[in-house]
Amino acid sequence: MTSDTLRAPRRPEVTDPDGAFTVLVGDPFQTGSEAAGAVNSSAIAVAQVDLATHRVVAVSDAAAALVALSRDELVGRLVSDFVDGEPTGALPLLATGRLDGFEAARQLRRGDGSVVAAYVWAHVLGLTRPARFGAVFVVDAAPTEPSLRLASPGSDQKVIGTVDAEWRIDRISQEVRPLLGYPPDELDGKQPLSSVNPQDLPQVLAGLAHVHATGRNAVVRLRVRRADGRWLWCRAHLSSIGEAPRFAFTLRSLTQEKIPDAERLSALESRLARIAQEVRSVAFPVPVTEAPVLHDIPELANLTSREWQTLSLFADGRRVAGIADHLGLSQSTVRNHLSAIFRKVDVASQAELLTRLRAAR
Image (cartoon, rainbow, N blue to C red; front, side):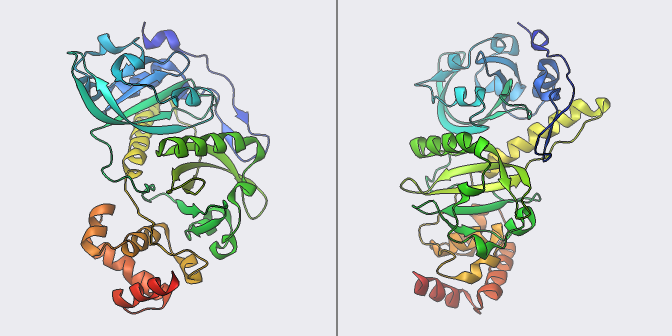
């Protein structure tokens, strides 16, 4: 079997009825040969999987090396042939469109019969739902700390927040204002699911059920109502926090651009790289056991995502060197984030900030 046998015909553009999102049904990620070309040439350890059959369609050299088999020996085989242990049960959720992605620590079975530990992220390819294909990214090992993992904000705009045991927002970052039009302090105590399009609630609930059952992150695609009443398509990473039903989330807008034919392969490779970057960034642990909430310190509504992450680690006992190590930042950058937090919370030093945090508990 070759990837060319999975080629799908190109179909016309379909516009979302809400006018908020345009889905290219002829998305190049949904044609087997084009997506396979991007995977085959990728420097990332990634395999393309047909979600209906769970069979490998394409594989990068780096991924083939991990299982000590050639591409020809891998293509057409079931994913389960290379996994030692019980299945996670999440792959069918990708096939039905209930999840956009999931993570799991797995034992990989190599061609020589040996078994190695690995950490995998599976993610759908393209924007059509249910998706035809998924990508399985393999990371060397699982995160060593079981605490909350939030996507690390990069150059693109991300909102991070947490929800309490009554499913009410108790922390949210300043980026929610430009993304959705809501002042962060107005969202304190609000139920986030009330702003989700009713048609997308099954996906969100399936994602939350998965993270609470497994303790691992899941990704869902959903429409969120903006302050002006319009729906915005977003991708959300969901994480469990301690005991259910509390959870954490990151939110960012989901857009689709048309790709000129001459640039399709390079564009697909770039998209794979961006997904892989999300995979790596989502593994940064951000403990929140001692972090304050908006109700305790209302001024925290002015914090950005990165400042929230810095404050959470600081409140959990980390200092500059430890925060920098966790977030992959320089110590001077961490000090800049702390200085910004000082101004927004109206304190003058780390000692005063710690006192303020302790008084708020």
